[in-house]
Image (cartoon, rainbow, N blue to C red):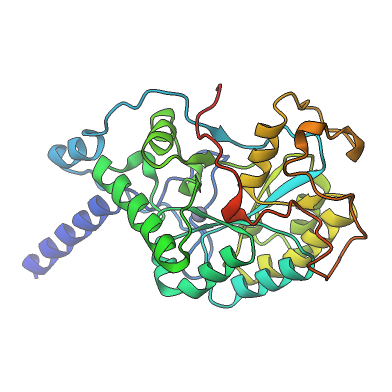
Length: 328
Ligand code: ZN
């Protein structure tokens, strides 16, 4: 009996070591929950902390080189036109994600999906479809750990396995990443920029959909708080979140917004660096510098015809490369 207990403790310790704190990294108010797995469950509670042996602790925090530079960490983009980026985390989900893609198609809207490599491996065709339909796929790691607690080799593996899975599924090389729980530091941002030419994408509007506040509450949060350049966070693995998507998309369009990918939003800023950060209501303020990616004057909302493009014609995969380095 004692032996079994000892083995159990050892196993538990090993699991907590290898996970580099998958659970319990939710102290930062700005972070998202552990939100994948059983979608009917509540966000994971903190697991009891096990004190790792010193050698393990050292291995977890050592070996991460210091990356210099000014990698981009982006929560919103200062664009003058009424563009927003809707972003979905933790998928792909075998039923909700395709239904969300159907809604995006219906409204000729684009979005960005920060996917888990482990789920990409299970549902590669959904990722292929996402890219083919002009939405963007970004990295959300393989296993959803808190990267700030992971060793250098683990972070590399989380990133590269996921990048490779996305490439294998869709032939698309992701350009953006979102850290699980929003747990990030400057060194990681620089690391992603230098090693993978990726910008780190946070958000400016958190729908808190995982708390299941009600479909209408999720819709209101996204639609009413949207400003030019907003990046909206929601998850594509919850039924209640999926139910809010059509209301969000149609509500944003009815407010005059166009839904573009994160990379398209960043490309607008790159094309018009002098764009004022202050929100404006008029589309007329778009400068000539936007001409590369600026769409036609906006047609009626809720267009179902793909030819009446509400958004830049470029598919996400063809968006100009945006440097992952910035001024910040
Ligand atoms: Zn997540």
